[in-house]
Amino acid sequence: MINLAKTKKLRIIPIGGLDEIGKNLTAFEYSNEIVIIDCGMAFPDDDMPGVDMVINDITYLTKNREKIKGIFLTHGHEDHIGGLPYFLKEINVPVYGTRLTLGLVEHKLREHNMLSSAALKRVHPGDIIEASKFFSVEFIATNHSIADSVALAIKTPVGTIVHTGDWKIDTTPIVGDMIDLARLGELGREGVLALMSDSTNVERSGYAMSEKSVGDKFDQIFNGCKKRIIIATFASNVHRVQQIIDAAAKNHRKVAVSGRSMENIVEISLLLGYMKVPEGVLINLDNIGKYRPDQLVIITTGSQGEPMSALTRMAFSDHRKVEVTENDLIIISASPIPGNEKSVSNVINELFKIGAEVIYKSLMDVHVSGHACQEELKLMLALVRPKFFIPVHGEHRHLVLHKRLAETVGIPEKNSFVLSNGTVLELDASSAKISGTVQNGQVLIDGKGVGDVGNIVLRDRKHLAEDGLIIIVITIDSETRLMVSRPDVISRGFVYVREAEQLIDCVKDIAADMAEINLAKRNSDWSMMKASIRSGVAKYIYEETKRNPMILPIIEEV
Image (cartoon, rainbow, N blue to C red; front, side, top):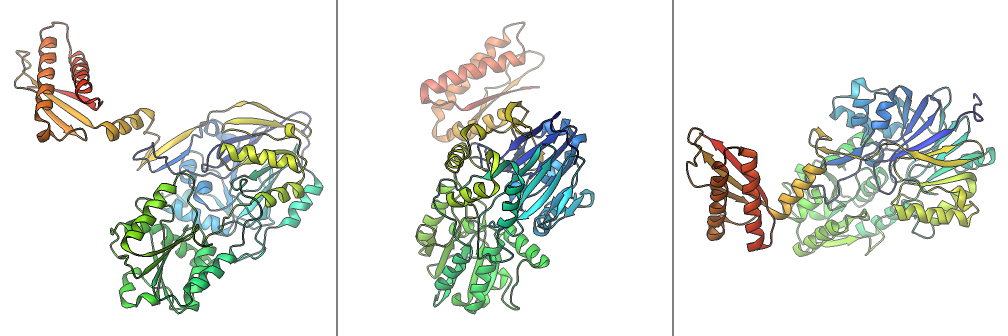
């Protein structure tokens, strides 16, 4: 590889994924070339009403589109691939990923009618891709809560950068090999300039448990159970779904699948050979009525209490095909993502109200994490032996704690960098420093709209949701400039008009007075009239109710 280390620096630019869980996207820039790691999305916060998903602001990358040589994916979770359709609409570059990862990407692009135009390049652990003149990328097998996960070793003119992706050490994986610690150790001996490592579980001591332990627990629960079993888990956790199917088959139960994303993942995994189902075990959800409760297992989405998910609809008796009863055992095989605790708790409470038996992680070990805990994180640092350390994939406290953990295994404090989205870290073979920022942020997806919901629209939505709306309709004779009739008032989400007639009558009177005052002025226009009506009515309503509804005056000319 060309040695320009003395004249140029490598720029590491996290666009998303820091100080947050989701939106993972990192750019590596050297000279006139850029390679990108992952392209994820995030789910909207509670203060984003109506928003479907959040993706990254890629303005910097769009301005430098000619430099971009490819996108390299670590695994197939939404927070790492969910933003790809929107990215590729703007910048169509090759996308490299392992078999299952690209299978999920293909499904996603097909939904956006983009599959035919995408350049998807399948790779295997151990492959080295010569991405460009200055970059080569090696794929290294890891363990995670989805099959075909990899770490990446990015060779550059200034040195090697190791990006772990999401990972853990699983010595007894359900499918495939355990993480390739030997190769990571070889890279450490060869010399690693910087390590970028997953920080999600840095607060947890010890080691992450093996996925196989959950399968053992399922066997215990299924054995002798006389109830119908409904299990909610992450759709993307192919290994978990496989273990549920195995336990069901061992106990002579049929398996039905509920939830669109779960159905898609099972279909793709079966097609690609990542999941094996004994003949006759998998049945259509429409046919569950043909079997006794002790002959059935239903695998469903909704482990995070998502409002429209299958389990939530079951809990609130709103599912068209599954009615939960006291003869059901519900297993929630997942931990709540930070921020989802209340939603999950609400679903569990509703299931208890129905009389169902509910098992969740705090009662029994029916879930293990796909992320490394403290001892594994220290082992990664010891194996790779990086000169510089950059904690990634976590909220701010996770990044800071990971930096402190690195110090305990010999990484100098001055050689660790807690970055934020948009921060530029410049490195050469012997030094690293922060050298500014690039534009970054979030773009909101609402239906087919991309970025058309901004802060003003969100503010209005929250205003409407919290305070309601009053519409005041005034009809003006265009010739005489007189009101044709008394103003009409419509209230939505503020007060019920028939139960607040006195208040509404006063609003009409104030609106009429303000309109007449403005009509009497020769230089008054409709915008001035609307502003005075809005001001006068708002003042009155606040004095009477201590509330601030949105007030929308409408003037009609006849």
